[in-house]
Structures are given as C-alpha cells and as structure tokens.
Amino acid sequence: ETGVTQTPRHLVMGMTNKKSLKCEQHLGHNAMYWYKQSAKKPLELMFVYSLEERVENNSVPSRFSPECPNSSHLFLHLHTLQPEDSALYLCASSQDLSSVNYGYTFGSGTRLTVV
Amino acid sequence: DAKTTQPPSMDCAEGRAANLPCNHSTISGNEYVYWYRQIHSQGPQYIIHGLKNNETNEMASLIITEDRKSSTLILPHATLRDTAVYYCIVPPGNTGKLIFGQGTTLQVKP
Image (cartoon, rainbow over all chains, first blue to last red; front, side, top):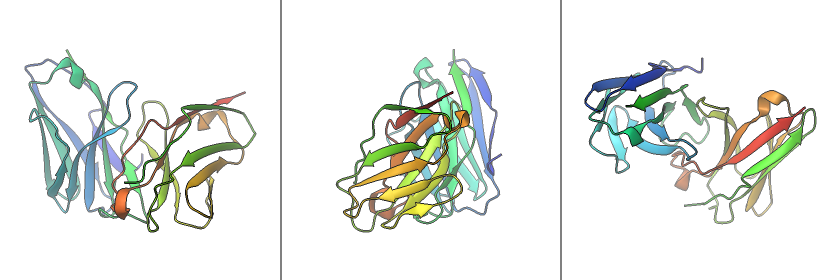
C-alpha cells in the first residue's frame, strides 16, 4: 500500500450505468488528482483539486464528474460512459500543488471496462 | 514548458547498472527534474528528483549535466523487479503538475 487507496480495483459497467470510483489518502496531503491511462498511451491528467477546490479540468467530458468532499477523499462519478472510456484510472495526492520536494503518491488504480 | 525526450526502450542485464537518459534542453533555471516508474498495471512510483546537483537515494542516483539540459537515472544493480516504464518529468514552472510522456520501457533480462 502506498498510502493512497483506490476502490474498486476492477469495475465492469454498462454504458447506461452510473458508478463511482473512490480514492482515499491519509497522508495529510492537500492536493489530489485523477489520471486516465488508456492502453499503450501515456497517463492523461484529468482533474486537479487543491484544498477541496477544483483547480484544473483538462477538457474532460461531462460524463466524468469529480467530487472532493474533504481533503482525504476524492471521487470520480461516471455515467453514460462509452467503450473508449475503458482504461486504468489513477488517483494521486501531493503535499500541495507545488510539491517541489515531495512528489506525488499514486494509488494502484481502478481498471474500468465499459461494455 | 520543458519538454523531455527519452528513448522508447532499453535492455539491461540483471545485476548490471541501468543508465536511463533524458533530454530536457528547454528546462528553466528553477525547474526540477523528477523520475517516476510504473510497473505493469500499477500506479507510478516516485524515484528521485533534483535541481542542479547529483542526487542519490536508496533506489537510484540522478546525474544532471552542468548545463541542466539532460540527466541520467542510474539503477546501480538492476534486478528483474526493476522492469518498468521510467518517466522523466519536468513540472512546468515548479507547479508540481506531472505531465507524463511515453517514458522508457526498461527490460531487465536474466
């Protein structure tokens, strides 16, 4: 365990389903991130949260809806996804947005398959 | 934003040193170089970072050239468990924001 826990580890959902991915950290970090990694592609930064406020949304479709209720938890709500949304979704946290001296801590990811 | 260039793949014999290069010729004076690695289907793992001086920790050494336009990550005694994709990243303006490229796939062979 890295200190960042993601659940579930695997998820299969239909295109009409609604599901949520959960990320939890108890490292005392103030910034949290969602990344998407499609097959044979680099990680793509989706959302950035700092002190529970969304500070970045990298042109992500509205079928992905993030939520950060407190500094320890981050959710990614999913609805009406497409098969091309199948990917590994990774959560990360850092001390703050600058994190010059600490870097990011990543979770193990949720492997999502949309059928 | 400093862009990094890495070779797509490298092989290394088990027990030998693995030297992974990275070019970052547009790096600014106050931007750090970070290295992460991603073992298959896991989240990326922080390895090391540096600004100007060479750095060493329990995982690796980082050698940064004097002009800071390139760096080399050194795994002194590679093991099969070091097989992974290695990413060299320069967060823009020290924002800490990690933008991943394709990285270098290191294959450690017996």
